[in-house]
Amino acid sequence: MKLTINGLAERAKYEAAGVSVPSFDVATMQQQGKENPRWVHIGPGNIFRIFLARIAHDMIANGEFWPIAGVLPMQAEELDVQLAAHDLLTLGVTLNPDGSRDLDVIAGLSEAVATRREEGFARFVELMEAPSVTLCSFTVTEKGYAIHDSRGELQEAVREAFEADPLAYHPHTMVLVAGALYARFNAGATPITMLSTDNFSHNGDKLRDSILTIARGWEAAGSVPAEFVDYVADDTRVAFPISVIDKITPRPSEKIATDLAELGFTDMGLEAPFGTPLAGFVNGEPTEYLIIEDKFAAPRPPLEEYGAAIVDRQVCDDFENMKVTTCLNPLHTALAISGTLLGYPTIDAEMRDGALAEMVRRLGYDEGLPVVTDPGIVAPADFLREVLEVRFPNRFLPDQPQRIAMDTSQKLPIRYGETIKKYIDRGLNLDDLEVIPLVFALWARYLMGVADDGAPMAMPSDPLLEELMELLSGVALGGADEEGTDDATETPDAPRATDVDVHAALEPLLSNPTIFGVNLYETPLAAKAEALFARMITKPGAVRATLNEEMNA
Image (cartoon, rainbow, N blue to C red; front, side):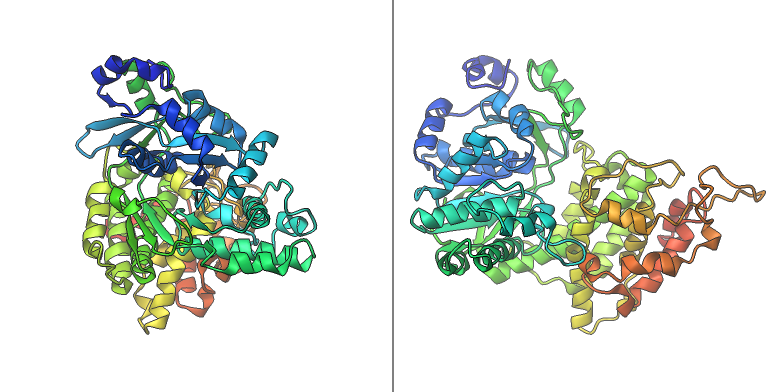
């Protein structure tokens, strides 16, 4: 049994395996979608394949024709492994908390191209020029929108793009998209909605700012007319709604791949051409939210009929703040950092650790909820309770701390900085915050690249990782045993923990408002983080000891 269009002809085998299959002719849908494209999506990764593509699938099944053209701006081989090998189909595996699974073939894509290939780039531009395309959505991760470095300066790739032809191929995703919008402008400047569905605060605003900055850079260089900048800046012609997406979608699991093989699938094995596992299936939790600001410049799919909520900006903002800055994402990051340091394999395993469970409980209830506004869609306390009691502890959801720990430097200013700003703006006592500075200390300890047991850690990717680890390179794990002899975790050239000037080591990090949203030395939080960090570097096991002491575990 194979996940391909021809493989779907073996419907009886799919049904016997408990797998639902499309009710429509997939090949016909894909041909019609190529001839009449309407919706482009940039970054067709796992959450897109099991969520947005499934929405498109459900629409098609109900006679609403909104198939999606997927556009991959990164490694083209990802497209080959995850989509092309399966005729753009995805096997969605929903992992329910009771251990049951829902298996569904998802057919929401009409085509998929990789812009690093010449023909793929040409097709992307052609799609963006088409007046029939009225929606372009994104899941490219937070770092995909970044055009500035940690010092607030334009990245080199962006500066170089200002001197290049806007209509040429550009490897930077935001420059690539800006150039495609310029092609659309030249082709008639028809309206379009640019919908970021990435998991960070004010995603649409960030997308708009990045595209406009690039457009203005080209205008200053004389490469585009002022009218193009006006086109991008006009929300009635190019809209950038904010949105919130929520569905925990781990990397594909080896165990699930094995189980699918036992069901009869012969093509659901994992491949890792770049280190990260890729597969024809996507595993995810059943809980999902998609909240979108009602700001569209052109015809759109009836998303609200398929589980999305189309709301005014304030409601979207309130839900986003609840989820991204207080009740889920900060808790996820806290577990990711601590779980990586402590060697936990999964998030659910961490939730059975008394100290870690107490850490995220206090982070949510004691430090987050006081600054949350009820969005009206779900009560914040109920949302948080579901996160802590159902979603994170789901034993059947194999989510790794290392996955969540990726790009932490890009996440901190929103996941924690916004809460700190709210405390300041509302005159609340920052001294009441105990877990947030603990998380900052854990992250600084994490940047040493050494696990709590003293072993080197495999560090998840982060665009600032090398730069930030260099700041901590002068600090080594202390490692004095009870007899006073040195532990092997100490390197000959690095000072012992007892000799480290913690303030000097951490000041360049904790004072950076680009990373934390504020200069932490203008708050009581820096001193707290320094004191906690000093305790965590004394010897192997010091992270565990500090967590137990702070959480009374």
